[in-house]
Image (cartoon, rainbow, N blue to C red; front, side):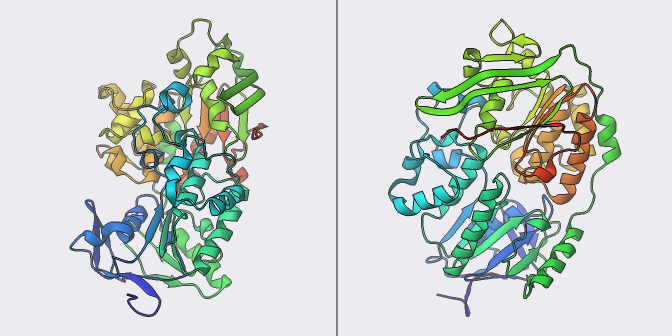
Length: 482
């Protein structure tokens, strides 16, 4: 049954609820077949919640959503984790780098199963530069490969509505271009597409309807009728991102840095392989104390694996020629000595704080180099954590559970966790991943202040060259092994 014309669903109740979160919906929201909707708003405004309501909030009695619930096929892509794909919980961050700990993790082919149209699957993978992944265990996928696979996975079946949360983050430039072309094809076949976005510049040119959101309120939808109107709407949407950060306090929180080494790390002829799969081959790279580097490379090139060698997370570091802080790996050093001097953030780090930790717990754990809930912070640790949370506009959420926050709010908290101890080597793997445009500006200023100190070393990973900090003097590009 179609509600009216091409309408496939309509959320009409003035209040929409999902797992303890309420959204104002005074104007209603209608989704029509074959149209692309850009839901745009700041981190924490309720975009992800709206997506979940459209997908599965029909069962909540107070939500009045009209449509044929039984026949409507709805798919969603949310960069959450491998756990929903694998049907199991990875116990700790380093697990995916340990070949003996992943025997129960399914391969990509096993996840796809009988739903897989082999020809279509291979065509999509080739277009997205996903090569030879069928026999790869899903937690061996890089963050970019995982996002691409989530897209391919949800497209394995025909859909009436596709909801995609922050689709562009983590994708290299070529993949972003193909993805936009793919969305056009999907819409042309009659599928409605809802994109949940936190940056006005990400609103694609083929958008039919812009749905602004502000402070858990769905505002009036705007029908786009021309390219000029879309440009104007992008500019109007910038008002949805107020400056909510205490930047001066952030910068005053950044500690002084001193070092007692000449080389932050040096990799000489490094190789990493799992069975016949070569991830890194003959990699040479030296970062000296005080140097600022950008690390670039397409999705799946091995950037995260390379960083796992530096951060002492990968057991294969012991069979490679690696020097960290002037000391050769495998000469009796403690991994905790290494970690105490490194501030590290990665796209998937949030997956390993899922045991009821509060925001204060997570930020304070950066002082102890641990992932997960091991003990509550003492009063001094909590005070330091609260100062960072206040500086980043999160103080009111300090006692909320980390896994109940939006992905952007989690990202800000993890950045605070990365910087709180004042490590001399900062390794930032896509640090602006999932942040709205106001948060990106503040975080970029914080990184520039922190890394701009002469003794600090920086490795900055990104797929957006315009995000590389001005202090970066060197670029290391990693090529993908075939």
